[in-house]
Image (cartoon, rainbow, N blue to C red):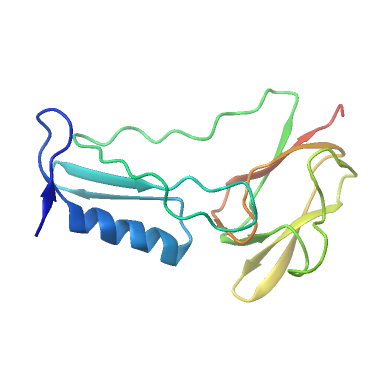
Amino acid sequence: MPRSRTAGAAPLVPTGLVRQLGLLLGELGLSEIEVSVGDLRVRVQRHLATAAAVAPASAASVVTGPPAPLTAAPAPPPALSVVEAPMVGTFYRAASPTAAPYVQVGDVVKEGQTLAIIEAMKLMNEIEATVGGRIVEILAENGQGVEFGQPIVVIDPAG
């Protein structure tokens, strides 16, 4: 099996493993995957484009040594409200591929207004605004998987 040498005195990493992890990212619609075997840790990430289309894996990184503690996405300033995914599923910004998105960045929303939907087990679940205000950022990509508790929309209640 071909092996590649990482920078410095790091151990050899099987390139086949890195390629397989990269393919798995695309198949499962993930943005990051990490595998640990003994002291070897391999993490492959892809950076998604901001457009609705899925971008191909654009970057792969190999990390060795003990796993680093997990870090959450940067927290927004305290004045902002973050709407989190209430379940695991697929995030959609509109009711259908041809429909207009429920909301755009800059839109003013009311508490309880539908922001998006998450498909879970073939059921479409409406995600509602927890507060009224202006949409500051939409963190989830259309058609991508989201995890329970993952921040998906940021609202500025003062906006």
